[in-house]
Image (cartoon, rainbow, N blue to C red; front, side, top):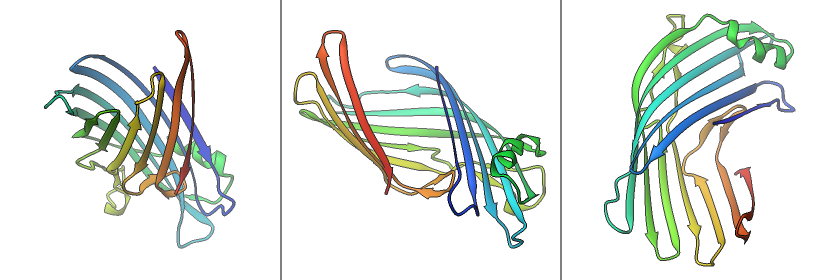
Length: 214
C-alpha cells in the first residue's frame, strides 16, 4: 500500500494545485491485479481577475495486468482497467489558495466510467535495460455536473522512457524522462529523473536519486 500527496503554490498566485494518490496491488507473474485512486485539484485564472476556476477530478482505476515475454530479450506489459471518475468544475471568488483547494470536494460533480489501458515495453541488451510506458492510452473524458462542454476534464496520456544499467554486481543505475509534457498542479511539466541503488551487505542497500522539471 502506497500513499502520497503534494500541494504547491507559485510565487505568481494566478494558479495553484494539489494532488493525492493511493494504490494497492498484488501480482504473481505473469498476472497482476491493482486498484488505485488519483485526485487532482487545480485553480486557474479566468477573464475576471477577482474570480478563479476550480477543477477537481477523482478517478478510481481497477485493472488486470498481463506481462507476457515475447522473446528472451523483449517483454510487453498491458494493464486493462476500468476507470470511474468524478469531475467537478466551478467559478469561485479569489481567496486563500489552501482554503479554495480544500473546498474542492464541495463542488457538485458528475460521474463517468470508461475503459482504458496502460502499456509498457522492456527490452534487454546485456547489462542494459530500456523501457517505454504509456499510461491512459485512450485519454478518457469525464463530464462535470454542468452541461458546458468546456468543463469536461480529461485524463491525459502520459509517456515515459527509461534506461538502466546493471553491469556491476550489487549496483543499479537508472534514468527516465517524460516523452511528452504532462499536466502538473501548476501547469505542464516534463520530468527527468535519475538515481542508483547499491547493495552494501546482504541485507543492507542504499538508494538515492533526484528529479526535476525540464
